[in-house]
Each structure stands twice: as C-alpha cells, then as structure tokens.
Length: 328
Image (cartoon, rainbow, N blue to C red; front, side):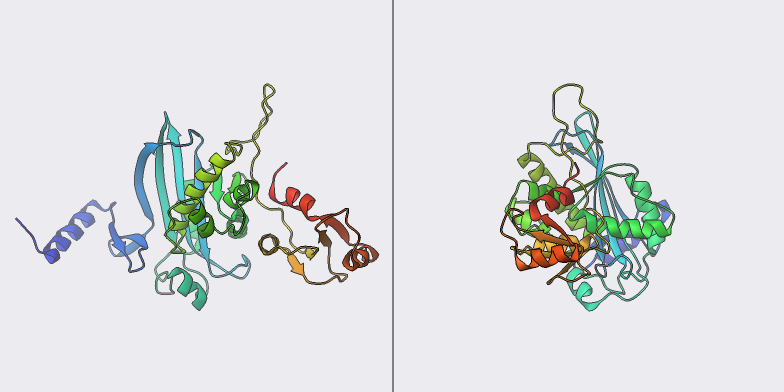
C-alpha cells in the first residue's frame, strides 16, 4: 500500500514519540543536520560505523572542531562543537559522532552568520556552553584530541572549561596544521587549502562536523607523508635503539608577548602568534619582548641594534619555530 507523504510523516512522528530515544533527522537548507525529539533539538550522535582502520593505529582518538563568534576566548563565544571519536579493536574501527549547536551569550555577528550559516534563530533552542561542554568532556574522555589549528580550539575549550572547574589539559592534543608544516607541504596551511592539495573531500561549509571529516582526511594523508612519525600514544622511554616517535604539540602560551619580524615576512607565523595570545608589531619599541630575525648570523640591521639597546631578546626565526611548533 502506498501512503501519501503527509500520512507517512504522521506515522513516523508517532513511532518516534513512542520510542522516545530515537530522533527524526532534520536537514536544514544549508545541509547541516541535527535531531529533533518531541519538538526539542538534540545533539546529532550517529550510530557507530565499523570500518577497516587504514593506519593500523589501535589508539582511540577524537577529532574536534568548533565554530565561534570571533577570535578571543574572553570576548567571543563557541556556537558549535563537533567531535568524531574513533575506537579501533581487532582491526575494526568504530566511529561515533557528537555535533551540538551552542547558544551564545550575545548575538552572532553578520560575518559569522554569512560564513557558517549559523544564525541567532538557529541556536535559539540550543543549550548553553556549560551544558554542552559537560557532554563533550564525557564523550571525549581521556582520548587524544586531533584538531586543525589546534591551539585556537584548545584556547576556547580551556577558557570555558576553567569557568566550570574543568580542564582538557589531561588530553594530548595533536595539530594537523603543525603536521603539515613539518612535511613541509608549503602554504597556505588552511584546512580547505590542504584538503584540496591532498585530495581530501572538503565540504567547504565552515561547519564543525564537515571540518572534522576534512581534518581526519588531512591527518591520514600527512601521517603517511611523515612516515608514521607522529604518535597519538603518550611518550615513553624506548626499550631499544628505536627512536621515540615525535609528537605534534599545541602552541606555547604567548599571552602578553610582543614580536617584531626583521628580514622576512610570514603571515602564517603572525597568525599563529596571534592565536597563541601574542602580538606582532611593525616596529621596535620598549613594549616589544622578542625580535625574530631571518638569519642570526647575518649583519645586524637597525632593528637588531635598537632591540639590543632596549634589552629585547633577539632570536632566529628557525629556533623560535622549533620551540613554538614542536614538543621536544
């Protein structure tokens, strides 16, 4: 018997309400999905998907991405969090997904609405960050967290977690941007640009779950290019002569520090310093804390001479990046 679309929807709603634990998937015009149960939006948690693990890594890990109203954890808010958790046992990987919208304390700026498609109306019925973050913490547990431009996500999570008496400091963080810079693949190192160069499917929607899936693809591709030299497992002393796998770390905390470049320009590095809480200035002043030079052995420039007069630290770009990007 063929039922009309309206009748079938009535049966579906009645069936779901009777079960009470299964939601009706609701697809927005922009392709974003969530679940509605008895008229209330619930986080999208997909059923576990079993698949072969291409990397043979049995360590559980989570891939995380957030969307925010701006760049400052103190002034801006998280409006979406997505986490893909992958657990591997006997060569079979099970994947679970958590995707939640977050109701911010203020309005979502126009540029963010245009970029993500997330509007004030979209998040009107969503939970606030304190409730969402508690569920995220339970979902992630103590598993390592993989993220692209990980320090940005970590700063927002840690800031909000501290307000709740929580922390994510017990999780190891792995940054796919840092990994790509170690290959090196050449800039730009934005997620979309890397996904395109590595033939990783990229939705290009600027939504958290799509970015998580792109991050997984970038992680796999760069992991292979690095020859598996990045480990998700905690560091331990080797039993023999094998080298300990190098791990990719989050950036250092540069809050309150002011940097000046001389002899080179690097917008990516400037953005990274900004994300880590530092500032990049154009000229030498007594507020500057570090002068980064292209070549420490080169003839001193006027900026170097002035920096030394002020007692400002002068460091080579190479030595700073080694310490800034990679955990030793």
